[in-house]
Amino acid sequence: VNAGEYSMNITLKPLNYEPMGNPGTCTIKKKTVQITVDPVADKQYDGEAVTGFSYTAVGLLGQDQLSGAKWIIRDANGNLVSQAVNAGVYSVTVSFGAQTNYEVAAPEAVTFEITKRPVTVSAIAPDRDYDGTTGGNFEFNMLGLAAGDSKNDFDVTFGGSAMTAKDPGTYTLTVTVKDSAKARNYEFDYVSNDFVIREVETEASGYVDDEIALPPETQE
Image 1 (cartoon, helix red, strand yellow):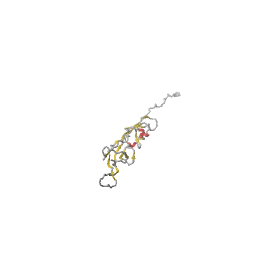
Image 2 (cartoon, one colour):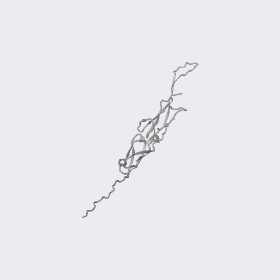
Image 3 (cartoon, one colour):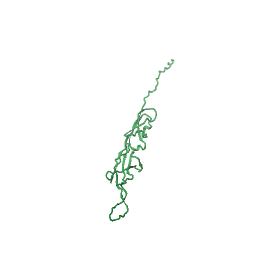
Image 4 (tube, one colour):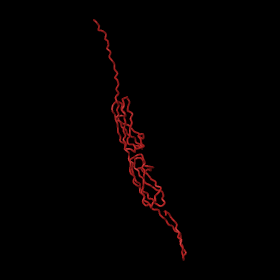
């Protein structure tokens, strides 16, 4: 039944002849199966690995199935990766170990993309009173991060006129996310903010002119 080489012997019950012959062999060749990797939908970065890869096999008989499927994923540079999580272009194909009855033709790889996730990064510049110092207690906020990611995963650089602001007035604070593996999963939209240093009212120091008593006029 299964593919392989089998020996064959023929037994005769002749009446008038002495049978002569040698045992024969019978070979059942493996059947070729064509594999096609099913298309993989693109998705936006969400911090989760792409799963659910599938293939279509043409040439299997009856209820037969292939065993030992191994998915092979490569990044845009052709490097093997264990899973596709970060933003980028990937290719995926499948391989099989030796099958008892089938010869599996290597399938073409299919490509898919994890696109960058849009995030709004806002500079936060709390107003303060003038105290003779430079700058302020600057912060930032990020809206739209994937579940599991937080702003603590990123380093930022602040900029703008607020960085050297000292005197009372209104200044501008900007923010930029530094490059990192995590940052490359996002498309950043930056929002600057005003930074205000308020004037401080102080009581003016002064003096009271006391009436100065002049000496009496001299009588001549």
